[in-house]
Length: 186
Image (tube, rainbow, N blue to C red):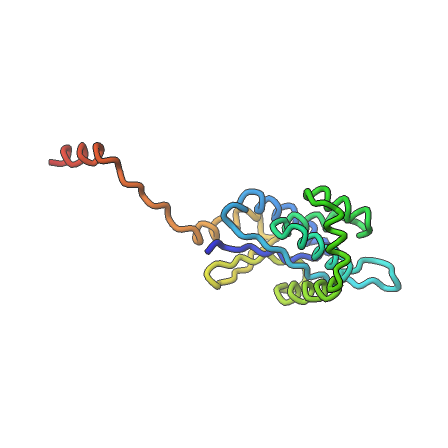
């Protein structure tokens, strides 16, 4: 089974926004061999309709992810770029990741949208370690936290990935080469 990297993010948290580009680079370079997931763990609550609202951004994340589950990580990174999550920002995010905005708005109008968002926030918060973003590496039921502030992220993840991938198998030499090798050793 392929290893999994899960980015637990909060689009309103400065450390999450700082880590997002490096996590996206990991996705770009390793998505063929690693499963990537994203979990929204926002804690911001709008007061009187003012300020950031994690439930609203979680609804947007769930709608975008439902339209393209394989793009969950780029979607999470794009959510960090949106200042105020309105209709125009959601359309821009959909277009930047190659989605049809109409499909995203269909998902956003789903009757269970609030329940999905609350379940996503609960999932994200249960995976979050401390305050701020978390990157989790999972392989063979072992979960390892990857520190996001301890240097280049690729250098920290590479040893974990190498330990998860089996050694390349040696290909048997063609028959003529094997015969030459045996003759040389006689």
